Image 1 (cartoon, rainbow, N blue to C red):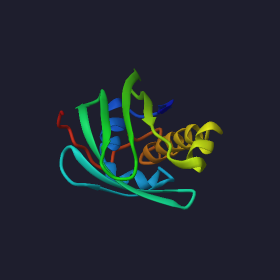
Image 2 (image 1 turned 30 degrees about the horizontal axis):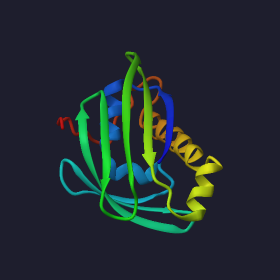
Image 3 (image 1 turned 120 degrees about the vertical axis):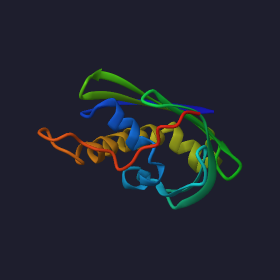
Length: 155
C-alpha cells in the first residue's frame, strides 16, 4: 500500500468547507481524475475515474462522518483499492485547514511507476488547490462563500 497526505488552508469557515466536501457529486468540478460520482445512499458512493487514459469504477463506503470534523471512507468491490480520511480544522472563524490522507494500492507496472514518481501526491495537491479555488470563488472577501449543498448527518 502507498500513502499520500496533503493539507491546504481555505479562506472559508469550517462549516462551508465541510458542507462543500460532503457534496460528492461536485468532485468532478475540482478533481481532475474524477469523471462522475453518484451518491447511492447516505454512506455509499459510486465513482468513475480516469487517470492516464485508464478508466476505473468502484464503490466507496463512508465509514465515519462527523460534521465539521472528518469524513472517512474505504472502497468496496470494483477496480480500485483505497481508503482515506479528510479532516477539517478551524484556523480562525473564517479560515479552515483541510487535510486529505489516502492509502491506495497501485495496480500494474504503470501505476507503480507513477506512484514512485510522485504522480498521486501531485494529483492530490492539485485537487486540493482546485477545491480551494472552487469553494473560495463561491463568495468574495466582502461576502461569505457558500457551499453548493450540505449533508449534516453523522456516520
